[in-house]
Image 1: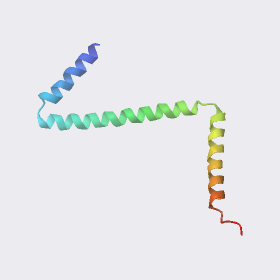
Image 2 (image 1 turned 180 degrees about the vertical axis):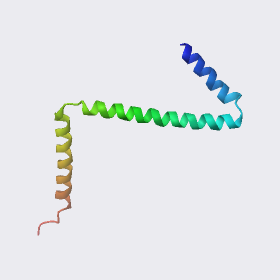
Image 3 (image 1 turned 30 degrees about the horizontal axis):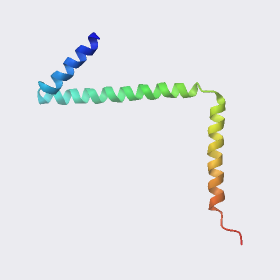
Amino acid sequence: MFYLIIAVLIVSYYLFMAPKSIKNTLSMIGLVALVALLIVLAGMSLVKILQSPPEVFVVLAMIAICYLALRDILRMPPKN
């Protein structure tokens, strides 16, 4: 709860009282933090996907092959 209060105070200072040069710097820091968070979340999701049972990957491969086969069948010229 303490950190939430500190975060609210920092954000309110940033929005209402910070000079323009500090706002630009904080915007870049926020952007870097957001990119770092997205990279960490992507890594965690990749680890979670790799922990899936192997049957999931077999099903995904079969769906991909089925899609390619149906696409080829639909693109065939009509029989005369």
